[in-house]
Image (cartoon, rainbow, N blue to C red; front, top):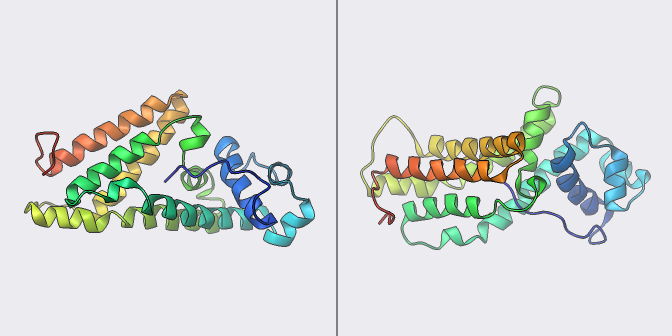
Length: 211
């Protein structure tokens, strides 16, 4: 998941400002390289306020993953890919939307929970699990449309709506890794283009219009 980013640190209470700071700074620097001082400076709060609200950097990491899940859920719920009447068109519109929001600096469009999960999956199970809830929870929002599209088109095979929904996230997160490795957002867009082709192949779509 990705996109909500860079709101003014003056907005909201200290806790919210710290969560917004974590969202932005960790995507730029990584979790380990982000210090409490970095977060306090970005959020314009004191260290005392930090530890009053979160107790530790790890607790902040868990809270940041949950905050990411909450804010991105609202962002995607309001996105235009829900508008098509056909469920497969909605799935393809989702892929197109994910491609369209890949813009700006790497830290602007890459995923906080994907970034943290890669870095701390072994060292911090609590943060890892919070990131997992966010990623898998988002994937689950695609399952109903995928399942309905399978039913509408009598598609069978040794895959499930849940597995394809998870695969969309594997491609998206992998695209972010390639974009970082190559310092090139176009590499992430290329991955989304291949995902679109793959879904069309699964559903035997030969033209541009899935209906």
